[in-house]
Amino acid sequence: MVRVGLLGCGIVGSAVARLLHARKEELTLALGGEPIEVVGVAVRNPWKKRDVPIPPHLFTTDALSLVRREDVEVVVELIGGIEPARTLILAALKEGKPVVTANKELLSTLGREILDEAEAKGVDFFFEAAVGGGIPLIRPLKEHLAGERVRRVVGIVNGTTNYILTRMSEEGLSFSEALAEAERLGYTERDPTADVEGFDAAAKAAILASIAFNARVVAGDVYREGITGITPDDIAFARRLGYAVKLLAIAEETDGGISARVHPAMVPLSHPLAAVSGSYNAVFVQGESVGNLMFYGRGAGGEPTAISVLGDLVQAARNLRLGGRGMGCTCYYEKRVLPSREMDSQFYLLLQVVDRPGVLAKIAGAFGENQVSIKSVWQEGTGERARLVLVTHRAREGAFQATLEALRGLDVVLKVESVMRVEGEE
Image (cartoon, rainbow, N blue to C red; front, side, top):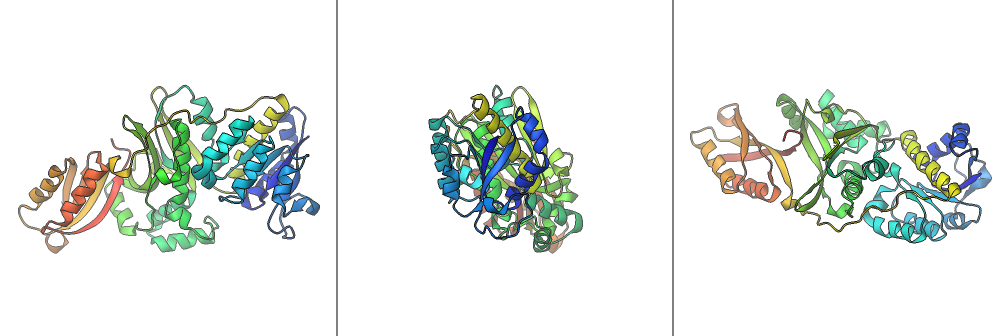
């Protein structure tokens, strides 16, 4: 029997407990006849009614004692956040016990400390569930593509924001209306800030970048914009031009270093990411030899995430019994992480301009002075409603921001109505 200490019994923790019970036979066979048994569960309120097949006497509020119990062989941390998760995970590793977690916030900020401790003790530390819910991403990147040179990872990694943008696109809802609907359906946390402001996606982008490029990237390195400023007009205008608006996490490696960013972007309707709707996630991985790979599926929810946890748990239990160990930290290199001003993107602008001769020449001059190349331009409307729509070629972020400042200073530009990045065209 493989004895597990479960830290946390919320949405994901409860799903893990139920699946361990419902699929006990299959999991036992996967471990060569040894069942997995939860021998203790640490929670804040042990008297709370929970829909889990765990006897009440196994619940405790003393998480640290549970971690240190001699009969606990593997620790599964599903509390989330920084503390007490950090202290508990480190305590388990110091005891020589494998740990499985879904804690993206901890990994993307203090991952070095955790992984170094796991390396020092020679025990497994698995975190497949930290990114992409039920979508296998970590192990494919770390193990299956170990011989590949990954150049770019781009995807939709937050189901809540993708649901909101889908509803705004399909029904013309405002951001606040779509958010309220997502909250009613239980797609958001009590405080949705981490989702809608891009913090959740930035943490996942940091983890993906670290693994894809074998170098440490933390959440603070990730340039971040949320979706709170996206309007129905933005989405409608994008659709008219042949785009869908998505919140993307993008990590890429260039000769200058690693860039990692999260922001809304216009994606061509012909691109597979444009068709990813609702709470689904999808991630594209671009490698030198394999070309494009796409991972798609449910990126959130108790049961999909629990499946990733169970996969890691089975691997940790198998290694524990056979005396092996999974691949540990793969951040072998020290690589420069680029500041936002050095990142390259393609841009879309919507300008309200005066309708008179010479306007386009002045605007083109602002672009030329900052070495930003215009890919396409056309006018919408006339007179007081005259608008110019411009799409650039890929340009340096710092140069584009200088262009924006110059445009705002032109007497022919009445207003910069919208600015958005474009992905998937070049």
